[in-house]
Length: 365
Image 1 (cartoon, helix red, strand yellow):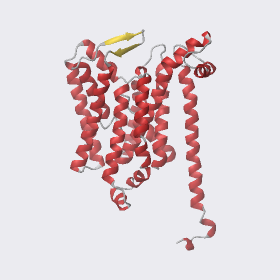
Image 2 (cartoon, one colour):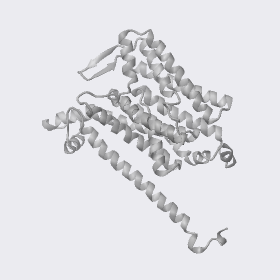
Image 3 (cartoon, one colour):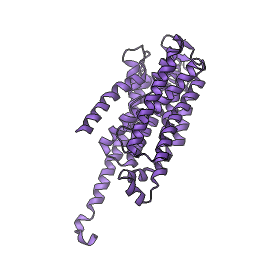
Image 4 (cartoon, one colour):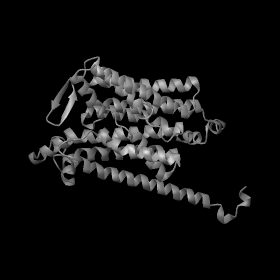
């Protein structure tokens, strides 16, 4: 075959690939730099404004600096903003990676943890914990926030609901041999069922319990402390390597199940493991932080428009994009009508809903 190609043209594909690789690596570097800059902005933004120099000084001085002038800034940074910002990075990366995995495995641009009913299942579990098990008493923290009195029980049942919804989707798809499109439709139906069940449970709730369920479903990074950050980090570190190692197999799946099977890929096994990993990431994030929609939909599409569909780059770059988008949305939520902090779930929904409409119009064309 190579004998028919002129010598001067044999290196063209290699040069083209190397140029494309450099462009993708440059994009990744730019995203990391943008994330670092946004990190400094987020740490300094809020009702108590801090400049980049003050933020850097507080970070290097630690949570208990010797200088009394830096003590307030250090307490604000280390006690309030740093766990919130790190939680935004971890949650955004988890949701962005989960969305990219689901869209690749199901070959559907509208697949995400939110559209597959995982978030709705977690909301149903949290609502049951608040209403049926009386975990919903609220108490105020200062003048800006409300927190649940028994948060770990809410987290436990929310995680059970999210993983339960994902398990039902996997069970239906595995036992009935459904196509990827049918799995997405099953997830939408399951999400609608979970939303209806949530409303029925809320109908029998007291006023304080109804307020607690509404507060939880907002999706708020302000409830994240260092223990929540540790759980989110452990989940991401433990689960993310599974889909990242299977990126080549996901590329084969993009050409269809028959071709992937011919290349030696176990289609059912890859789809089962990948979907379970994505569902676990989304369920754990939702259980600790509430419903944060559309990150798993926005991030993969933004990256796919920039670098294409190569899963080796799409998966890690979607995680970076998810972290960048969620951190930006949370920063906007804190400064838009400061000192009042908007729930980040509402801001991401405002960003994601127009994108969903654009995707539907593109599919129609």
